[in-house]
Image 1 (cartoon, rainbow, N blue to C red):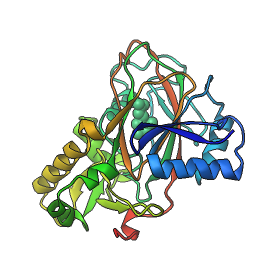
Image 2 (image 1 turned 30 degrees about the vertical axis):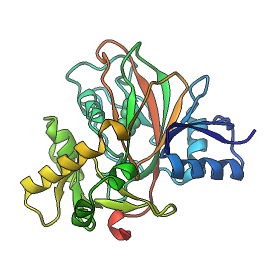
Image 3 (image 1 turned 120 degrees about the vertical axis):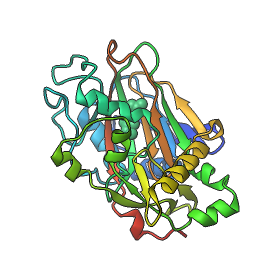
Image 4 (image 1 turned 180 degrees about the horizontal axis):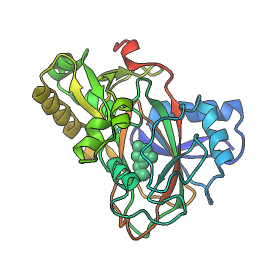
Length: 295
Ligand code: OGA
Ligand code: MN
């Protein structure tokens, strides 16, 4: 079976068939999927049942190294999934019950409803995220993706010139802080802002994209209000309907996205009533954006 892509919209997002994601891939299949990522930025794999942790990690390692473990905001009772290679994208506590409205992990998880790029608050951010659906609510809880290449292309030449060499500061203090989530002293230290280029160039395709995220809060050398205004203006531009696709999950689906060229957000659902359990593996990009040339 050959690897086939059915685009969601021209050039952005595609359903990928012809690979069994629960089995080891051949080098050719892995290369074909990676090439699909370069073209489409988001790939959807339908699978009848959720993957085991081992299957998801094996599939992930076709595309690079997993991110090292990092300080996470925990549920009151501790962690539900002990494996540090899996991010628990759920509204569940360690005993599997739905988190209460005021649980810190729940509050922090609400931050996924802001447009973002995963781990942009780390000096070395994420390349690919792979999210697999285990349990879904009866409605709501879609995930949306915005094409940051198309958004960049659509900017006026003047704006492109203005932002070409800008460097932003990213931190969870900006994203979760905006939501009013209080931090401990040690979190504040762990969440010190990191620098990210605002315009990135894809190393293989040479296409430029906007590197925005809810975690972006300042622009180096700029007064804070001007930086906020520009970041918000660009985010508004980049998340217009013409750049966005929406994924409605089925149990077993695995969606893989390129954090270099896309932003994503969760859509709301009745999260104090219904469980939603998705599990993420993340491939590191291995290099700081400020160490990369914009052009
Ligand atoms: C994530 C994320 C969105 C969602 O897993 O990084 O932002 O819809 N998920 O759960
Ligand atoms: Mn995310």
